[in-house]
Image (tube, rainbow over all chains, first blue to last red; front, side, top):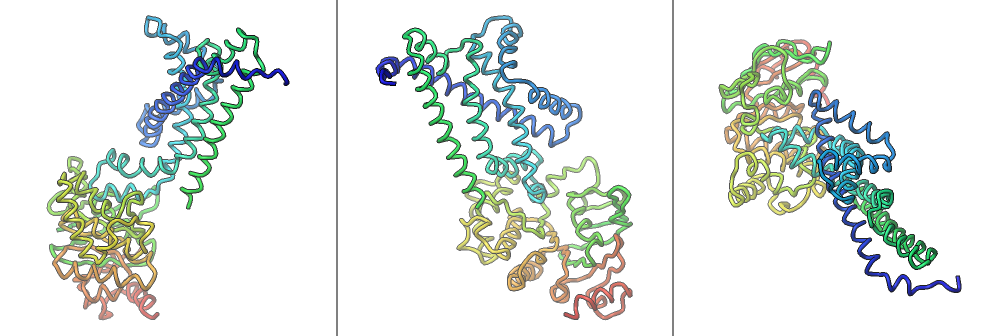
Amino acid sequence: MGDFDYAVIYNNLPLLIDGLKVTFLLTILAVVGGIFLGTVLALIRIAKIPVLSWVAVAYVNFFRSLPLILVIFWLYFLVPLFLGRPVGSFYSVLVAFILFEAAYYSEIIRAGITSVREGQVAAGRAIGLSYTQTMRYIVLPQAFRAMVPVLLTQAIVLFQDTSLVYVVGLKDFLVSAELIANRDQRLVEMFVFVAIVYFIISFAGSLYARRLQRKLSV
Amino acid sequence: MIEISNASKWYGDFQVLDNCSTRVGTGEVVVVCGPSGSGKSTLIKCVNGLEPINSGDITVDGTQVTARKTNLNQLRSRIGMVFQNFELFPHMSALDNIKLGQLKVLNRSANEADERAHALLKQVGLSEHASKYPAQLSGGQQQRVAIARGLAMDPIAMLFDEPTSALDPEMINDVLDVMVDLAGEGMTMMVVTHEMGFAQKVADRVVFMDEGRIVEDAPTQEFFKAQGSERAQLFLSKILTH
C-alpha cells in the first residue's frame, strides 16, 4: 500500500462529484416517486377498490419477485420503445427504480396505515370529514410518522442499489470512479475511495434511522 | 330529534341489534345502559351512520341516516360524538384537534376557528393546555378536549359512547361535570354509560339494552323506582351495590 496515490482521487474530484450528484439525484427522485406511487398502491389496497385492488396486489407481487437488475435492463429497452423515442439512460433507469421501489414502499406504507387505530378513522368521520380528508389529515400523517425510520432504511438500500445502473452505462458515482480507475490504472485507490464514500453515507443514514426509531417509540 | 325505529343489525350470523326503537327529543338527555355486549355502543354508532344498519330506519333532525341519498358527511358534522378512548388526533395539539373540523368541514376562517377553539377550551376548563399534545394530557383532560372538538361543530345533538369508562376514577367527575353543564344548557344528548349517578341527575329517560334488544325505555324516575323488568333490576343491583 506504500504507493497509494491520493492525488488520483484529488485530481479527479470534479468528475467524481458529478457522478455522486447523479447517484443522489437518482436516489432522491426514486424515493419521492416510489413513495408517491407506493402510497397510491397502498391506498387502493386498503380502500379495497374492486379490480384496481387486485391489480395493485398483482403489481406488488410481480415486482417483488423480480431481480432489480432485470427490471433496470427491461426498462432500458422498454421505455424508449413505449415512448417511441430515445430518452437517455437516466430517465429509463429512474422509471425502473420508481416502479420497483413502489412495490416495496407500498407494503411499508400499507403496514403503517393499518397501524393507525381504527377509532381514528371513526373520529375523523364523526366530525364530518370525508374518507379522503380523513386519510389526508388524520391517517396518513400518523402512518408516515411511524414509518419514517423504515422508509429511510429503504432509501439507504436504494442508494446502494443505484450502483446497478452500471449495467446500462449511466455515469453515476461508481461508473465515474471505474472510468477513472481504468484510464489512470488506479483501481485500488478508486475502489477503496468509492467504498468509503458509500459506507459513510449509508452508515450515517442507518444511524440516523435508528435514532429516529428510538425517538418515535418513546 | 333522533328517531330510531325497528333498527336491526347483524355481524354475519350474529344479531347485534334486534328491532330497536327509541327516540331522543330536542333538548332531551337519554342514557343508554346495559351489560357489555348488549349492543348499546353499536346502537349509538348507528345514529350517525358510523355503523350501517341492515333494516329499520334512523332519522336525525328529519334527515334519514339510512337513506342512500343522504350526505352523511354533512349530517355527521352536525352531530358531535365522543368516544370511549377519546380518539383525539395524536399528531395535533389540543387546539388543532378542535380546529380541524371547523376548518376542513365548516370552512371557517382560521381566526374564527381559533377563537371558537379557545372559547371551548375555556368552557371545559383547559385554557392553559391549548398547545399541548394529547399524549401530554391526562385521560380526563383528553376526553374534555374531545367533547370540545365535538362542540366546535355547533352540533344539534351530542352522542357519548361510554365517555368515562376508560378513565381513572378521579378523572370521571371532571368529564361528567362538563356533560352535566351541557345538559343544563339544553343540549340534546344520547349517552351510553354506566354512570347511574349521572343518569339520575340529568337524564330524562333511561334505555336499558340486553342481547341487542331494548328491554326497557322509561322516564328516569320510573326506571330507578324498581318498576322495570327483572333483567334491568338485576343489572342495576349489580352496578349499584358497590
